[in-house]
Image 1 (tube, rainbow, N blue to C red):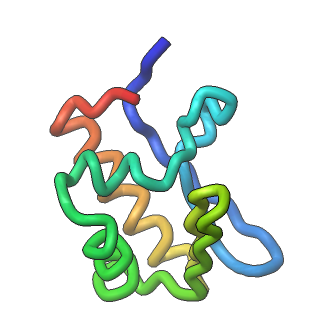
Image 2: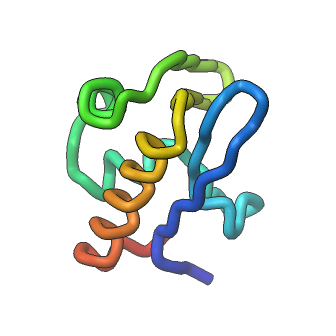
Amino acid sequence: MSHLLKFTEWESPSGWHCNDVSDLAHGSGYWWHVPRMLNIKLTDYVLLLKNEFNAFDFYYEAQYNVLLWKWKNYADCHKFVLFVNREAKKRKFFI
């Protein structure tokens, strides 16, 4: 069953993270949902995260198509979460 994309944030010892963790078994956490929703290139998505939302420490594992990143502080992570959730509602982006 599909649902509206909705990110939440959490803190780990390495920094702040966010994703849609509501249905991980069915792909809610795939990193490419947001660039598809925004209709931007995957590389532009990474630049958006880095330049507009101050994300850092990017890691990509090609074998599993996993992209990871983090934030140093809650404010930057939360700003991104608010942006994603607002855009998902506006665009009615279901996953």
